[in-house]
Length: 535
Image (cartoon, rainbow, N blue to C red):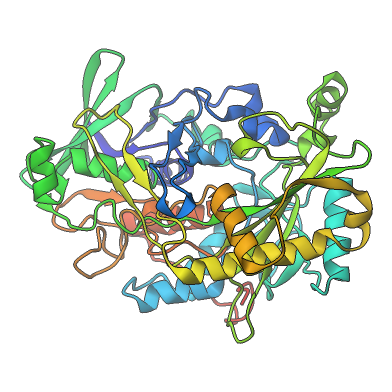
């Protein structure tokens, strides 16, 4: 018997296991379906694509996406200690102040910017030090890359020449502009995942138990109270009991699947799965949102890219704490308002120092670079649907990218802006020839290119949405509606996708949820509203 059973050792799960076990009188069990985070590729920042379709990846794909010429999109998600923070590109972005204030206005009381900002600072150990914007002594390592590649600098110089302002801190007072991303990479050039920063330092606590290679099949209920979980390791079926709460941190694709197989969902669908109904929750699996990403790739003159970057020389440099393998590949980017009158940016740029071919599943065919634009606040919504009572069967995932015309308008403008940057200044001088670009510069040609090439940028959210309306799955304290002793704490509870990369927001969410669970006084910001809150 444990006080808390936490399902999923991703970003949120690692935070909760660390924070809840700070109380020596509370016993915590953290369960992870995948292996320990011992793969060498996890800890080499530039090697993240080598983890795709490995034992550390759930290896999901979407269904046929109607807005993408009925293509299926590869959807990697972390399946190891640290979850997707162990296979992501390590960019540290908090989102925009408007994201959090919009959530609060839509029924997520207590999640406005003033409420969440202290938890970003609590989590953050920024190499720039503590100030009104950043935390300096939190567990999450955040910093500037010690190794800066040639191509990102050329991108920034060209973007400035094309009229975009430079931004020193995307998490400061202004999100707009282009600049170098801060990342979750240690000073020694190693990935600073949630497992590295939150879990490994406390693994020796006697009140914390971590189980790997253990897939949870369902939450156990007595009436409508969650009392534990049933899990499988190979052919062994095991049960683990929770005296206080079960906390689901399985992620945007897996959390709704687990709730459904536990009897929480739409009764007609549960009947088809032969799963007894525990609570009628209409919204489970709905409201799926993601940042659709597309752009262009170019070959370059010279060899200043990450093609063939993994070799004896660079590996030796990485082991010494530097070199190209110590950087995340997507070192530079920016935020843009594609229309006059927008209150906040609507697209985000990423520059990758390699040709990202076939969703990263094949090696770069030549030296080059990739530029991508993603729609920051898409209106389109998709769904995660459970198709079998077998918990090892993958769910059906359809993002429904570009179902709403406004999303396509933003993406066309974003891709056009990238093409203008590529044709300007130092980047144009380094470009040898296009590799994969639109057939023309008119809207129709760019739209056709977008539909043929869009992929995820790995930011799915929303399938167990927080709120108080009929379609909300959890309340503003992350408690599942209609039952007791059960919470969901991960990106699936986000009402909408934040304007930026989602790892930092997920960690901040879990930091605040830990205080709510423990009944600790919840922090509020003493900083001015416009400090540390880009608009």
